[in-house]
Amino acid sequence: EELNARGLAATYPVILGGAALTRAYVEQDLHEIYQGEVRYARDAFEGLRLMDALMAVKRGVPGAKLPDLKQRRVKTTTPALTVDEPAPQGRSDVATDNPVPAVPFFGTRVSKGIALKEYASWLDEDALFKGQWGLKQARTGEGPTYEELVESEGRPRLRGWLERLQTDNLLQAGVVHGYFRCVSKDDDLILLDEHGSETTRFTFPRQSRGRRLCLADFFRPEESGETDVVALQVVTVGSRIGEETARLFAADAYRDYLELHGLSVQLAEALAEYWHARVRAELGIAGADPAHLGGMLRTEYQGCRYSLGYPACPDLADRAKIAALLRPERIGVHLSEEFQLHPEQSTDALVVHHPEAGYFNAKGRP
Image (tube, rainbow, N blue to C red; front, side, top):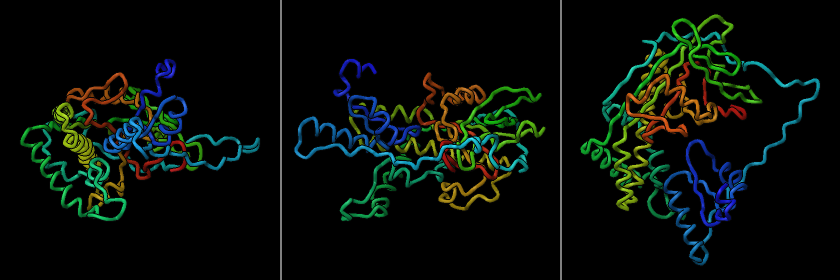
């Protein structure tokens, strides 16, 4: 707003990214209110390509231009409800008679010094090589295929980085997780103490159409007289790896910086998946887990993990409630005033045991 008011927006292009943003939101909604260039970058590599394009345009390089802005798909208008068709109310059709798992404990536990070998097998190589490191076949179809690039560049560099991380002791993997009694009421998930009194309440958005799902629906309703359980977790690979990426950036070692930063993000996610699997095992719902990582990444299991900032639970302010319950400062994780986890290579989540729980957009259909 200040740059707009001072007429300086055109001088300062803005590049945004992150899990809580979409390309359409940045390049349509935000582009409309900012008087300069606003672009979305899926990852650091796309950010660098945008910076190159911006500089080329600024310098007047012949033929230089920015990529086209993302155009939002035009949705079919939903017919207005008539007087005889009142807006739907109440819970979705999610079952309320599924078994409530027995948990190994109530409260929280801290685990530190988790060895890389414990969670390295959960690393999503495609997300690392394609999304973070930008490995891809040339658009012309010439040159090595993606699979050949993985073998000749991706995995050798990955092995080198993993060896360096251990040699230089750059990983400080830690987890705090816990189980809490709970019930639901309307769109709220209410956490309870051992006496049945409310300690914390989360309010989640509900779909306005389709099944009208809401995350609260996957827990026993308050009026049932039964209590349910929810698992919470915060994981981190520590601050040292972030300090090393900052050092590489300051030394203008940009390729190493981008590779290590991308790897650190995916290692945090691998640790989260590894501990998520442990939580499902502790809940007794891991018996049908797929045998291979691909099936796990396709969520072919019971017990979904929901991270804050995503469509089913978009309110980042809820991180303060999770932090108050889990006290992640015990593993070196702190929450900023903007509800961001520090170190960056950290994640938080709720694990929902209900067999119907899946990923859905609260604004539309599952």
